[in-house]
Structure formats: structure tokens, C-alpha cells
Image (cartoon, rainbow, N blue to C red; front, side, top):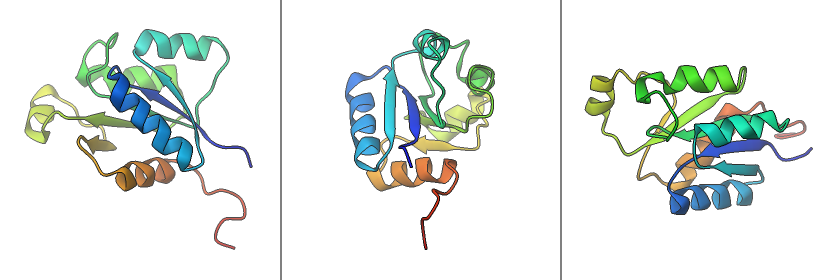
Length: 127
């Protein structure tokens, strides 16, 4: 089975690179873009992710409270998780209610578990 393509939308090159490296080592095929415009261009090129992992405060978005809806429109049917260093009470004040949020800083195993949990089980696993 081919690796799952995970689109990472992260403007911090160090965080994005680390996330991509960890996911690659976990057997996935990460693609990294820096903003919403680049994500839209990536899709326009014919690419389709198995899952999307985006920073909450990403350039090109109408705002953190709109990001989930924007990503759902760009990637219909793809599961989406958000990464953020914004504290929970501040997210609530911003109106961010997304169900899958990975709080920075995070343990690498938490990242892998989150992404694996968004994907359908691989054929033949656990047998």
C-alpha cells in the first residue's frame, strides 16, 4: 500500500520541516505548504491529501474562527486537524471549536497518533 499523503500547512519552516520529517519516518508522504494560497495551488495541480494538518494562525485565512470551514471547502472529505500554540481559553474567545487540535508544543508520538487516527486502517494491519 502506498503511503498516505498528508498535507501540512505551516508557515514556520522549522516546525513544518520537523512535522514533515516525523510523518515521513512514520511511513506517510508529507507535503508542506506555507499558507492557504499555496494549499489551493497544490490542489489546483491535481493533488489530493488523505488528511490535512494545519497551523491555526495560517496566512491567507479569513481568521482562525473561519479556518475549519475554509479547509473543508478546499479539501472536501479530507479529515483536518489543527496545530496551535494558542491557549484553549484564547481559542474559545476566538470562536475556534474544531474537534481535532494538537497543542504546541507537542510530543512527536501525539502527532503520529493524531494523524494515524485520521486515516482509515491500512489493509493487512493487525493480522
